[in-house]
Amino acid sequence: MLKQIKGLHHVTSLASSASENNAFFTNVLGLRRVKKTVNFDAPDVYHLYYGDEVGTPGSVMTYFPFANAARGKRGVGEVGVTSFSIPKESAAAWMDRLATFEVAKITRDTRFGEARVLFDGPDGERFALVEVDDNRAPWTGNGVSADMGIRGFQGADMRIVDDGATAELLKFMGYEKFGAQDNVTRFIIPDGNAANVIDLETLSGVPRATSSAGSVHHIAFAVENRARQLEVREALLDTGYQVTPVINRDYFYAIYFRTPAGVLFEIATNEPGFDRDEDTAHLGEALKLPSQHEHLRAQLERHLEPLS
Image 1 (cartoon, rainbow, N blue to C red):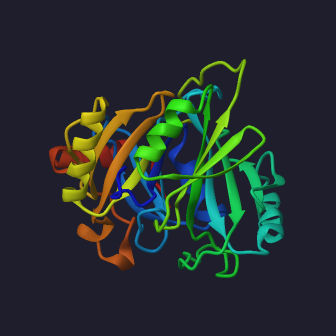
Image 2: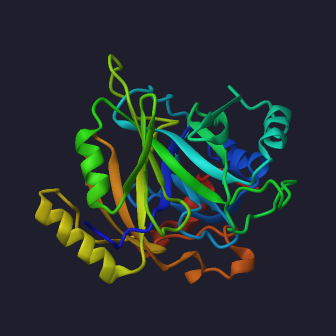
């Protein structure tokens, strides 16, 4: 069993509008945009990162907004809900705030004794705000006070047909079974980074998800550094997984592999971080380009939708 993985690093999804996506995460949820860059493989598309003050691993939601993309279809073989941590007794305040912004499909429930507020993002992606004890510092922007501010991720739900193989993978990655409720089995990383929950939701008679706007592209797990990442990569290869070589993503190093359920996993390093090319006070303000796309700056600045 691996000991290097500390919980979630980031979650990356697809969107249909950069401006709507930016407004939702900064104005509605009150997160900080910590990086404005472009997709390595499609530089005419933004890659936007939202999180806490410095984009701490375990706090960062990222998006590829492909303009006017059709909405994806929900199903099995995907991350169905991305969950953020909020303070105890703040769910009611979030219900009111989300309603003020006319956010879609707001509901409340309780899972494993934790109060949750569930709602849809602008492309129909499903989120939850979960009341938990969490001492991480929030980003208090756009009218979201510290007593209700998002602390980072709590975790994520994976919608699958059979949880057997995925459960074994999570255990190999260092997760431990916490418990079961209805058709959901919870796994937690002990002594992780607080973004430490994965819920496996088993569903029968449900078609496979179709990826497009509103779909999670991949879910990334955090390791401290490149040395720990190489240890994880070697262990996954020895277990039979097809793992990519290490890829430099400027703000972290990444490897990818596909799970038995079809969900794309990434293992990402905590180093070097989002302040490698911007001062902390000005994170997310300027357009930052990968070095191989710097020659396209003038063209991209004309093409990319302006963001406030």
